[in-house]
Image 1 (tube, one colour):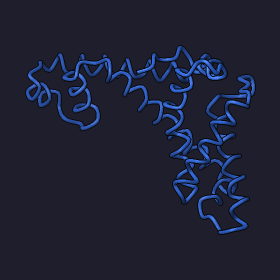
Image 2: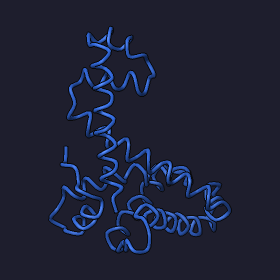
Image 3: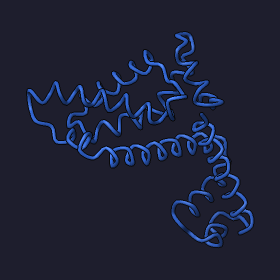
Image 4: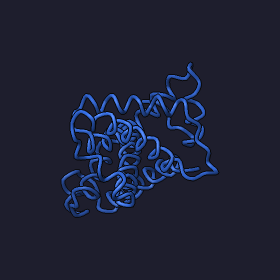
Amino acid sequence: MPSWPLTRLTLLDRIRDPGDQQAWNEFVAVYGPLILGFIRKRVPQDEDASDLKQEVLAALLKGTYDRSKGPFSKWLLTVVLNKIRTFCVRRKRQVPLTGCSDLDEHPARVEEEWEREHRQCLFDHAAKAVRAETNPVHWEAFWLTTVEGRTGSDVAQSLGLTVTNVFCVKSRIMSAIRERVQLLEEE
């Protein structure tokens, strides 16, 4: 697994270096699912969605994020929306698309959806990284209590841990995930 980037900005600087394949892989691992998932909701064909994702990634390499103009996630959303709009204009001449109308009719809703998906994507990526570094039994305790909502005593009994241990593990893992998400959000 690639090492965790110090901040998103250092990662953005690094992806412009053609020799830094690790940075590109990390960037695509973090943002690729977000971009593709968002596009898939608006573009009916998986092939088209994948092509658009590649266009967005290529545009990100050519573009320059200026942090004085706002958060990275808003800049990324702008790039994604512009690529989707261009696609919709090209396709509208051929066949009507249902997922394109909300882009301009409900911009606040689109932005809220993007932010929600962005946060989920960062959480998923951070959780995956933390899981890889965590004792499997501890991860299971975290997952069962946090995601599945099982009681601490139930989890402790099923995993052979103490209740105190279960809650310490849960707290430690959640803190590690938050720290990783925060690193990616730093501007």
